[in-house]
Amino acid sequence: MPVFDLFSKRQKRLKGEFPDVYQYEDIPERLRVQIVHIMRDALGDKKLPKTKEIYEFIHKTLCQEHGKFFLVNTEWFGDINYSEDVINFLLKGKDTDEVIDVIEVTFKLIDVLYRETLTRHETQPKIDPDDAINTLNIRFRENGVGYQYESGEIIRVDSQIIHAEAVKPVLHLLSDTRFEGANEEFLKAHQHYRHGDYKECLVECLKAFESTMKTICDNQGWTYQPGDTAKKLIDICLQNQLIPSYLQSQFTSLKSNLESGIPTVRNKNGGHGQGSQPHNVPPYFAAYQLHMTASTILFLIEAEKALS
Image 1 (cartoon, rainbow, N blue to C red):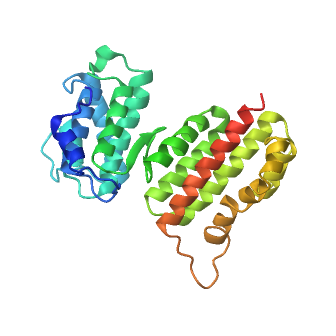
Image 2: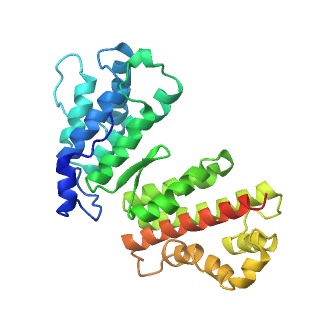
Image 3: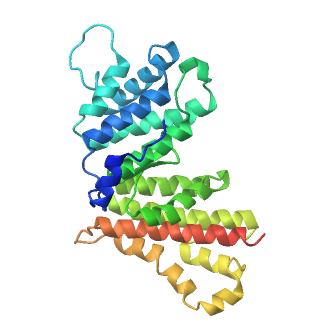
């Protein structure tokens, strides 16, 4: 179903009642109910055998991963109503990360299974996967909850502008199978960030940055060694005119900016031994690293495209 710009929404905007800053700790009841509506429309008629199988798969996946027999019910009452237990867990779950798990597993199935292998008559969905995902992301934004479904995962969004202009385009470009390694590492960085593992986030950011440069070298036939560091890979890319010489001379700080950006942030805060004093990486610093990595990878891939 389309998202309607209702009178009540317009009035809230006029009054400044829509949140300007994303929050991540709570999934409001209103949003949970809206997501259930999307799920029901996208998964199809729950009375049909194939739709029942889908709900059972979601239920068993979540139960196995969380070490449970039921998601909400605590006693055995004969046959399990899988769809009811999944939806009740989404509506009543106390742990935000576990609620996000329900959304991620469900929409990954909608995105992949419903798009590639299921025919409409098997489940009779009311909306297609693109509509479901687009509506989900709109509902997240409307409710001021800082998550989006992108490239098969729920990722955290800190700045809508940066996300739209850097992170989302990078996820699209990295979906190219040639950049499979960099894509996996960048998504891991997001996952670590979402779970508060900020040191690991920095490590994966550097990996994604280096993997992107190695892939570009492979694409172009430029020689490098498997163990080359980011600094060496940057030198190789610049020596081979990934960035035109006139831009290198005009922006004399380009090389130093690349060298002192992602690798240095990671080395000082996420890599190597931390000594007698543990390094605490604050969330805003990890967010900066994610955004810097996205912008840099976008810059490098677009520069390679300009070579042809």
